[in-house]
Image 1 (cartoon, rainbow, N blue to C red):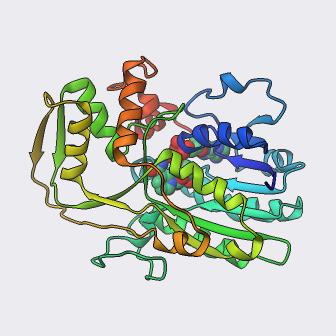
Image 2: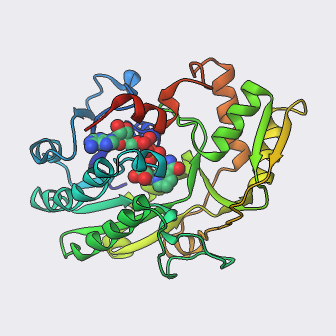
Length: 330
Ligand SMILES: NC(=O)c1ccc[n+]([C@@H]2O[C@H](COP(=O)([O-])OP(=O)(O)OC[C@H]3O[C@@H](n4cnc5c(N)ncnc54)[C@H](O)[C@@H]3O)[C@@H](O)[C@H]2O)c1
């Protein structure tokens, strides 16, 4: 197995909190660069010789250079990571999600990083009628969050070189339990409502949404680390291949949580539906999904029953927009 010295920006976020322990378990050395907006997540790994935590802002190039010392790979997750949080302060969102991007890429190159993996988003496609939204379709981002994700993809590919392999992943919406929990993504929202309210509220119903289990998301990044440069360089792949109508997502949640859960459906004037295909990453580098939506719901229910989440209906830590409103980050 190829072992890396990986810098994970945003490593203390939802995906990072599940990824870091797995990277360490595989034997990689890990540096996390994060503002820890959502709090501490690595208590169980404190003092681990393969974990270095840098608490800082990726917009500060000196902090970035310090974090990059000794790293040969970057997985770039940090950002203001949904539309409402981005729109709360578009200047802040742009400064983190876009303005800081190229300086990070260039600093990585200068520091001798060999591989740079970027977490984009399947929202770059906008809403498409195509039954299979694949990577070669034109991008029609509908929001600034998505527009800057798309721009970063282009800028990253332009930086690729013989000693600098780059790869972009466009994840579906992530679901399931992680140490730093998000409860503002659709499957997790429904599960939270079902467990703690006994009632799921569905807006619309037939619209399809792509989702990926958080451990499959983690497995994508682990898989990329084991591929040869030539297999991933300048590649852009969707991650996720599970597209259910949201009414069906609610049914899946009810099936796991129990028949006592009621589903309330309210009409929407936004019937947009989309689904993404995970065929390309499967065919080109053999990445197969392993977990289902049921697995994600079960994991969350178990975590809630075990008391791992504190006041899940109201705690702002679980809802990016609520926390960003409180933090007033500049
Ligand atoms: N979660 C999803 O459903 C999903 C779907 C598609 C794409 N993605 C992408 O995957 C990545 C990870 O998503 P997530 O759900 O873990 O997000 P998250 O919001 O949980 O984590 C983002 C992390 O970035 C950190 N951060 C923000 N600004 C920073 C800055 N200026 N300097 C340093 N750290 C900073 C935050 O403290 C946080 O820990 C993001 O790029 C996101 O756009 C996520």
